[in-house]
Structures are given as structure tokens and as C-alpha cells.
Amino acid sequence: MDEKTNLIKNKKNSDYRTGLICVLACQMFWGFCPIYWQALVPIPSWIIILYRMVTMFVYSYIAARMRYSREEIWGPLREKGVIVRYLAAGLLLTANWSTYIWAMTTGHMIQASIGYYIEPIVICIFGVVIFSEKFTKYNVTAIGLALISLTIMLIHYRQIPGVALGLAFTWACYSAIKKSTDRPPLIELVYETMFYAVLAVIAIFYIETKGIGALSFGVPGKYALMFLSGLITLIPIALFGSAAKKVTLFVIGLAQYISPTITLLLGIFAYKEPIDRVQVISFAIIWIGLVFFSYGEYKNNLEQLES
Image (cartoon, rainbow, N blue to C red):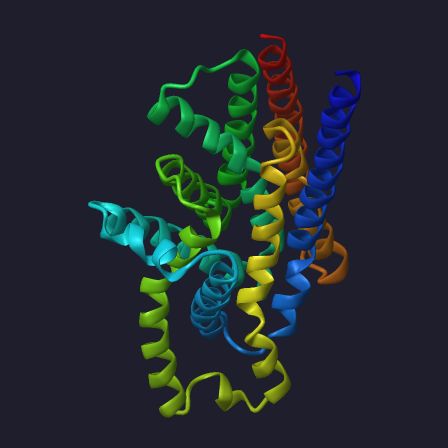
């Protein structure tokens, strides 16, 4: 019995270490992705988005076929309501990706970082409003501080931080839909991308034949590099999916602050995006809120383990 218990314990420890490596690798990969998107300039972001929609479906389907049969992949689409649900999820995912790529290639990395910092707080609000989850005093504090930060930016710049809020809300809505789905992640990605990949193929064919597509920029190396865009997306998603089964949600939630921090530093130091005192103050307020939020999640995680 002791030997069996030790084997189980060692297996859990090994899985945890693997999961921790995967979640850290995922966030590091995501954090440094702006370097790849910047390498595609001067190809416009809207063209990159079209190619990403197509290549993401291709890579997702290849990866899915390596693990599942055709019937396992396409069979569930015959169920009532499945297509509509994944059409909605795919639309939100495409909106989120499109906003992200535009931000990475047009000098808005810092604002994108703000979006990914407030994203978990927005998801928390959705959890309470849609799924009747309970607020804690830590959640309320974090939400309040995030609102203060956004209010400061709104008053100072006299405009809504559209990139930040767009990224946060599209991903929160996407996450809410995903709570009602139970398919393997790779198969779900096939569903979420296939409808829009067809439209993207038509659009790509049109712009390339008209001479206004990626080929018209005369940068064959960058054009070839663009076909990796789907793979660049799929790798961190695969790492994340592996990590989610091996570590706690608290660890995943805490680790997700790594990627926007890397992106923020890249934006400031590598790509020389301007940052002023108001943005620094806003980031500081958000970070204080994230400390409260993370501590609340930590306490909640401990209570669940003890119960």
C-alpha cells in the first residue's frame, strides 16, 4: 500500500512539474509573440489576420487528425445548436485575435497589455453576472481598482481605451461561451475557425488577384513567414491545454500575468512606445488590484483543497 501510495504521489508530482513547465512556457511564448508579428511589417494587419484565420484552421485540423478520427471530429456537428454556438465563439475569437494583431503591428502593445491585465477581472464579473458565482471582498477590491484605473485614463486621454477593453471583453465573452462546451480543445478550435477560414480564403483570393494583397509588397521572406501564423497561435494553446489538466486554476491564473508583462516591457524598451506618468499610475493601480485578486483566488483555492 505504501509503495502504491508513493507511486501515485510521485505521478502527481511529476504531472504538476510538467504542468508548471507547460504553463510557464505558454505564457513566455505568448509574451514574446509580438516579435513575430512585428517581423511581418510592412504587410498590413488586416492581411495578416486573413492569413492567420486560414492557417489556424489548417494547423488545428492537422493536429486534431493526429489524435482523433474524422467521425470524432465532424460527428458532433450533427447535434442541435452546436454550429450556432461555435459560430459565436469563433466570431469572438476572431475579433480578439484581430484586435491583438492590429495592436502588435501598429504601436499599441502597451494598451494591449492593459487589456490582458484587466481580462481576469472582467471574466470574474461575467462569472457573477452570468453564472451566479459569488463575489468576494478581494474580487470587489480588484474590480474597484481596475475601474479607478480606467477612469483615470478616460479622463486624462478623453477617449475610451478601446484596444484594452476590446481584448478584455471579447476574451471574457469567449470564455463564457466555452463554459458551455465540452469538446476536446483541438476539435473546438477546428469548429471555431473553419467557418471564418472559408471567408478568409475567398478574401485572400480576391485581394491577391487584384494585386493588393501580401504578394504586392514584394517581401517574399515575410510572405512565407506569414504561413506560420497559425502555428504560432496553436503552440501556446496546446501548452495551455496540457497545463490546465495538471496544475490548479490558481497557478494558471497567476501565471497569465507573465505574458502581458513581457509584452509591456517589449513595447517600452524594444519598440520604444511612449509611456507617460498617467499610464504608469494606471498600471500601478491595476497591479495593486491584481494582488488582491490573486490573494483572494489563493485563499479560495486553499479552502477548496481543505473541504
